[in-house]
Length: 376
Ligand SMILES: Cc1ncc(COP(=O)(O)O)c(C=O)c1O
Image (cartoon, rainbow, N blue to C red; front, side):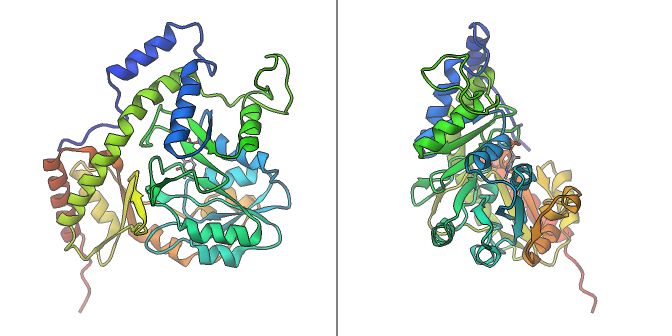
């Protein structure tokens, strides 16, 4: 099967990297860093972009700017990568884990409402796999209760709802360019925002408290160094040139793939809101009914398809939260999805059409082979 490797680089990455290597500035002050920040923020429909070493420190930076700390609560989904929650804990605040929606895998606004207390300061929804959360409902809730909406958009490069991109809904949004993401330099992150004072503080804290136009040796904020390097920006600029086309290829291949597998009643694919006009398709997620998930995944894996049997547990079941303070709302949906779900990595859907047809065939075979026999 011709599934392309990921990440993958060509001459353009090498050329831009060489330009950095041949310059006297390999670090965060290379002009490629500012160029990438401006281009990517604009692509996500935000006014400002502040890059950083990864998409975990960007979450921590955002919480610091919001002044969130001890005594505060921040609502997060029960299903995500760990740093969505640990960013809150590292700020000294308490993450409150709430359940996800059964079909979108995203935080359930009804469950968010039930979790709000006078201590709640913010909500961090995650656009799981690139599928946008119910932002209308979340924004309404946040307005009603005076909460900040901070999007964890680590999966959602290019995802858009009615023409408006991920990262332009909340006060700020955090993106990741880690190795597996649809836009990557191995590591990297960016906070995007359209709030000028938020952006100025983020830029200053991430750059040792410096201020634009002031001396390099003057430090005005209790900042640190989160800067992305010029070498990372070179790779990201080259990868970014390919992103819009890769998104289109994945969208079209998924349309074909879903048509070919539409009759398989054993699989329920993650669904997006009808208004979602573009999806990064970072993780193509689904769940199985009446089939053994692990056997199904073993079958696909043996056929060379990049499949993962979902997260092994909800966030609050990580050992760190046996120790760290947190509040856990009932999460029956998330606990079920842990058992029955899987995802296929985005690189599978960059394959040529004949491979997409072969992936659909292999999915059919794996479903058939993993059917659970119901004892009569
Ligand atoms: C939802 C989510 N949030 C945050 C992160 C953290 O990003 P990074 O790995 O760049 O620190 C990730 C990355 O894997 C993620 O998937």
